[in-house]
Image (cartoon, rainbow, N blue to C red; front, side):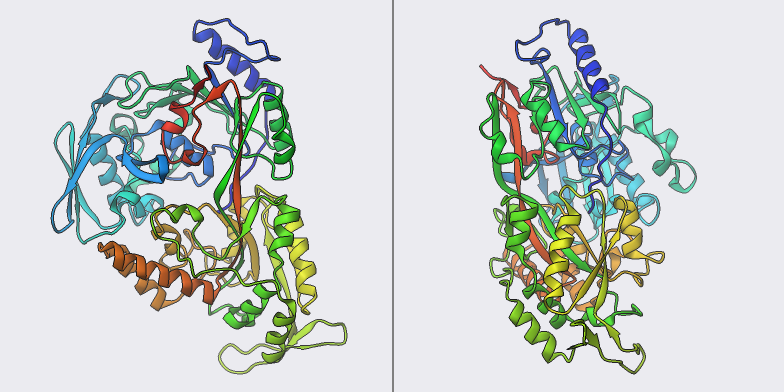
Length: 562
């Protein structure tokens, strides 16, 4: 959901890099500006790392950090294909209920043995508290019954039923060091949500890096784990510096104070393409923006927004091209699916789900046909209704919650929607949403009952396998991952069926059906899919932008050019 943005401390970042250069035994300084020794890979970002605790982290770069520091059984590699991480190979029983993972030899960064028992302990912890403190990670172990370790390098995971996306689920499972975390579980597991590993540095890590400095609002430093089981880092260290101002971040790249930025401002990307010593990369992205609707059938007000036909009219009135040109500088494409283009390679993207064209006349005709007549001021009026959910007559005036931490101008996008919908007799009023957590409470309020909100703007970075993002509109995800309050028993049954359908062709057919169903019911009007815009210094090479957060190789593979 939301990706929060916070403050920047450039001075601290510079001191960190200089300290790292000294620690690495090098005093060399490159000729460009104040560039430090090129062995320090300096990344600028507009997404901050909130916590190194995977039981509570929800931000984009939280997951990126977990990927770098914690062992995973599998990860996504080049081509967005699942490949081994800690697991060098795996097999499963004919019935798909027992999976055997053969693990690579490694150690935790404090020198303690990294064994299959750490994975067993982490799995047991999540299973024990899946309905409580560990609920946020429970989906990664959907269907898991138990785990065991016949020896230090073999992990057995047993399932109670077939699960279709076993490997895709486990890609989101991070193995924790039992010898550190066991002391923090607490009564009924409540301690695992209150523990902050970032407060006890250096972090005990089993992945490619440990963390030696953590600043939520500044620079976090990743140093290579000397005992890592996989390909070693080709940089002496990686620093991740948070910026609230993307323009300042881009300027630092041009001046040689950064080596890579993970998200260029949409409107400045074209100008940067001509900058000396900078390489700009643009590719199809995985950020799907949306206009969401409170879809709880028990909501007491503005119940007409539950109508798929009304929302069809709204989609015809939505000027996606204007949004793309004005908000995203042309670096996006119209979109209608809940999952992103990155799911296309695996066959999960239904090609028939396409956005409606911009036709305000069509939108007006639909609203006329629904009986919503214009008043003297041009604003449409919803007639009074009777029955269990009776409403008095009221104008079509709706609030739209806009979080203040979007990675694009949510205010400008709202203004475009406001002007466009006024042409069809609908008034939109902006409600400031605050940061991601605050916006979610407004959307799901009161207390996760989804009764108060009308509409909101937000976005998802969908996973490659569709199971998770298809789950966020199930009743089971209310006040967890659901931001719509959508409640459709037929849809929920389909989701359960696809989650256990191990026949890929049959599962794909059902997934396509679900995508089309959501596009028709419209708990969201998906707006655009934004392009991924990144840039790096020509002094470095080996970047794979779309693997940030998916593969340790994102940070281990880049190396100085030449």
